[in-house]
Image (cartoon, rainbow, N blue to C red; front, side):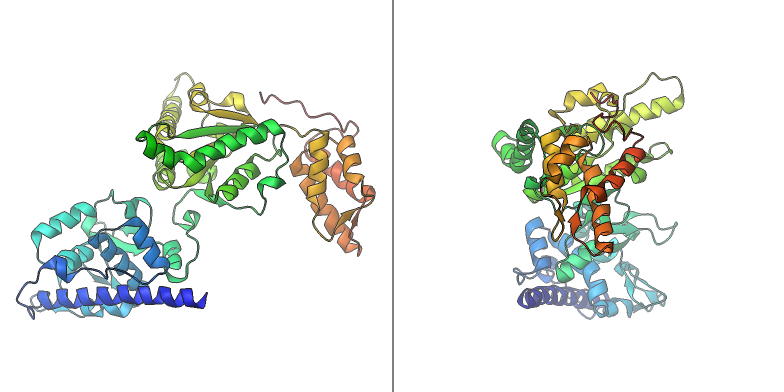
Amino acid sequence: MQAEAELNTAGLKAEADWLSAVIEIRTAELTGKNSGWSEPLKIIAPPPRLAPGFYAGFVSINGYSICERLLLASIFCRLYEPAIFNALTSLVDPATDRLYVETGCFIEKNTGRALLTLQTIIFLAAGNNKRLSAEYQKILSSQNRLFIDGIVRLNNPSPYLNELLNSLISLDKSYYDHFLYGKKIRLDEMEKFPAQLLETTKTFDDLVLVDEVSKQLKTVMNYARLYRTMGDKTGGQLQGYVTMFFGPPGTGKTMTASVIGKELGMDVYAVNLSRVVSKYIGETEKNLEIVFERLGNRDCILFFDEADALFGKRSEVTEANDRYANQEIAYLLQKIDKCNCLVILATNFKQNLDFAFTRRILSCIKIDWPGDDERKKLWEKALVAPFSYSPENLPEALANKYAITGANIANVTKLACYEALANDSTHITLALLEPFIKLEYIKERRNPNDPRQWPINQLM
C-alpha cells in the first residue's frame, strides 16, 4: 500500500513539475523576458508516461488531449500545490497596476490563492498563438465531458462576467480525493447529483428467489456484462436494456438490484426522487438530465425505485399542469431509448406505468410474496453469528405459521437479537420473536390473528 502511495505521489509530482514549467514559460513570454516564441505544442508537451498511480490511471484510461490534461493538472494543483500559481498572481501589468488580463486569474481575498478560469487554461495552453487558442476553446466548450461528467465545476465569478471563458474552474472533491489517495469515485458525493450509490454486503447466494426469477435475472446480468461487446460486434445495434422488478413491498426489489451490481462489479445508482421531482416547470427534466448525462455511457446500473412516480400514465390535457406532466414522461421516453447502461425500474404497482414505457421494457420480473420454502430460507439466513435459533427447527415452524416478507423477517430478527443480548443470551426463541412479529402485522394493518393471510393487493 505504501509503495502504491509513493508511485502515485511520483506521478503527481511529475504533473506538477510539468505545469510549473508551462507557467514559467508563459509568464516569461507575457512579460517579454522571452521575446522569441517557441513552438507552443513543444512547450506544453506533458510527461509522456506518468508513474503508475491513481491520477496516472485516470488520465491514461480517458486519453485526454493536452489542453484537457492541463486543465486537470491546474485545478488539482491549485489545491495540492497552490504555490505553483504564485508566478501568475504576482505579475502586475505596469499599464494597469492589475493582474495581466491574459492570464484570466483572480485572487481569493481570504487566502491569497489563485482563482483559475477557463481563460487561464487557454492562456497556459496556447500562449499568444491565436490559432491554437481558438482550437482549444472549441475543445473546452460546455459540451466537454469533463464538464458534463461533473469532474470540473464551472462558476461565474460575477454576473457581469458570464462568458464561458470567464468561468471559475474547480475540481470536484470526489475526484480530488481519488487522485490524491485512491478513494473510490462516488458520483453521489458530487454537487447536485440526484442519485445515490447503492451498496450491499449481500451476495447472489443471499437472495431467496424462486428458480424462474433467478433465471430471468441471469438474462438481465448477461446484458450488463456484454452490452459493450455486443455494441462492438453489431455496430452499436442491440444496445439498451430496461427491466422492471414489480411486486409487493418488502420482497427485496432494491436489494436484488444492489446484489446484481455487486455480482457484476458495477456501481448501482438509485435516482433520488426527492431531489429529482420538482413542482417548477422544466426542473424535473433538468435534474434527470444530469443523471442520464453522467451515467448513460458508464458501466453502471441506473435504478428507479417507485418508478410509477416518474413513469406514470399520461393523462388527457385539461389544464396546463397535465401538459407539463406529459412532457416529462415524453422526455423520459427519449432518454430511456438512448441510455446504454442497464436500467432497472422497481414498482409496487405495475399497472400504474405508462403503456409507452411497458412497451420498452424487455423483461418484467415479478418478485412476489415468499412461499413457505422461501420464508424458511429467509429465517435461516436472517441470523448472524453468534446468535442461533432454539430449537433448531424454529425457522420451519415460523415459515409455516407466519406469512411475512423478507423485510419483515429482517426487522424481527434484528429486534430479537438486541432483546436477547440485553438479557445476556444469544438464543433466539419463539417467545422472543412473536411480540416483534405482531408489531410487524400491526404496522402493516394486518390481522395477527390471521397470520397466513397476505394483504389484498392489486399488483398485477
